[in-house]
Length: 331
Image (cartoon, rainbow, N blue to C red; front, side, top):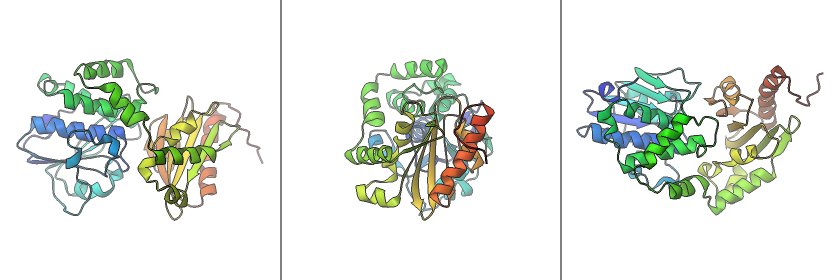
């Protein structure tokens, strides 16, 4: 197992980053690692470089210290990429490429492990769970966990496990969560404010996406798309789109939910979720993306309808291999 103290030994500067459009797990893990390393290596400069998180995470210690641009390039002794491969770090790639040493911590099955040192556990519910394991590997590290750090790790775990309802939740995950909440933070309030609450704009854009969704493959696949014009109409930003794909998956009878939103001219971001038997990570990897068996994503270019058809082809291949009726007619 990766020894964080040993891997950062001698470093005077450490940068931490994650993927673009950071979700709760990415935000929780990067900031939890920042909090931990500030205690472990107080003599170090330690920074988090990340896209600006959604405001519901403003309560997390250190969020006001996040570097959200690359206008002041700096060469870190160690750069740690969490919840992602280095290539998906957006503007933080400037720092990743300049770093003297690269460490990768992740839980995505599509990540083969990158950098000079890495630890990837595909069985973990979240990158935050992986980080907890690394901290718990030594008693001297475990002793550094306090209420704030426990709360921040917890944020990461609940967001990638769907508040412990997704299939990536294991008995081990629940034991870790039990240990974390013993530190005394208000976990019901945290779940409500970061996972369930929606702004009026988020509710509007979600309603529009569900209203305009259409079924495919005998209703086993539900697809919806939000274009730039619709986002501008509601005053929505990409952070307001989180959760839409889960709403599509919650529709009865749906095995695969696909939510697509426009990021540029004929450029789209694809988010996919599955319920029980389709491996959406395989679909995402085929198109240059990645993720988990039940939650994955990618970016695609081209005509919207061609993109949907290309995605369907990959899903149909899996369904046919499982002898599941697709409703497609062979020509």
